[in-house]
Length: 145
Image 1 (tube, rainbow, N blue to C red):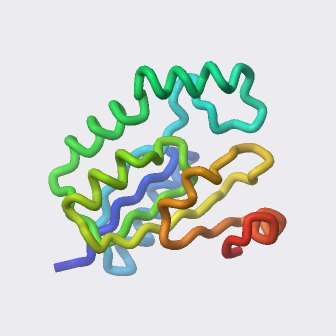
Image 2 (cartoon, rainbow, N blue to C red):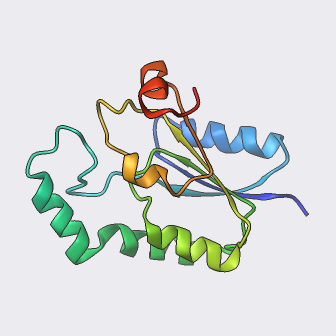
């Protein structure tokens, strides 16, 4: 049986398909969830009314409702690896849901947006490995480049 990977990445100019193809060529069975920026997302560093946006997320849980729906749409939720690009929908609920069925899941985060655009520090703690494209962020946040 092929190792299974859950790819959570933004839909961006078809890169999500290219990444899936590359992972399949490496021998993985890939499932994909769109890591989309939900309305009133508070991660943007320039977000206006950031506190109100966070309260909205705490009260109405749009990220959890979205993840619940997406995970329920997957045929199989057993995974060896979680590979996320950015963190728009990353939250403790996702990790609880995945760990429940995948005790030893390895989690990898790749940041393809600079910390000057988005603040992902709170979500980074959930991942075993964190990488960035930005050498400045690598030094500043002590993550791999």
